[in-house]
Length: 190
Image (cartoon, rainbow, N blue to C red; front, side, top):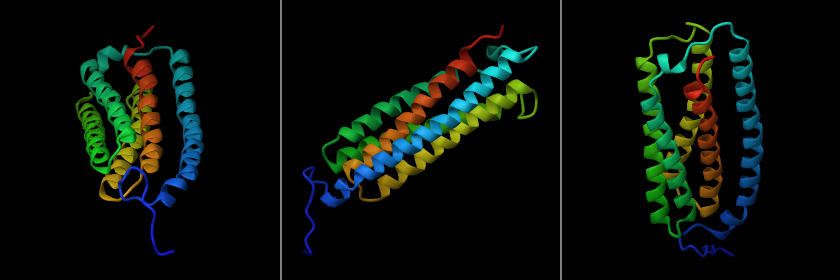
């Protein structure tokens, strides 16, 4: 009764922690569904404001595409490293891939901070600036939450189910960036 069964992965995490993970995955999917509604509402608002605006600046005149593309690459690469972390057989390999994911997430946030510091527009400059900061800031907060989650996993004992649950969140945040990058950075002005 006092013994703990160890999971088949040999990572020292009790089987009970892995079996109870189903609730975590279901909870994460529920959270992601509600969070997708938040992002969806922002995308709809952005589209309506942009279409109804008398004048909308060309994003290429205000935003640097190369740094944003590098940030996008970092997120796409972090999706790969998170997938490798979820598929890793042992604790050491999981930690290596999670560390790579953490580094890429931090690189994305550093790129966003660099971009904000070098923009010639403020939050209240115009409608374009306001929607830009709202969409990218909302997404950046989600990346920050993911970075904190991954960092926490690196400092604690966790099972493969916990990594899978964190992976769901991370992939969602990565996927949420794609329409932001497309709409805000690539969609030319009328």
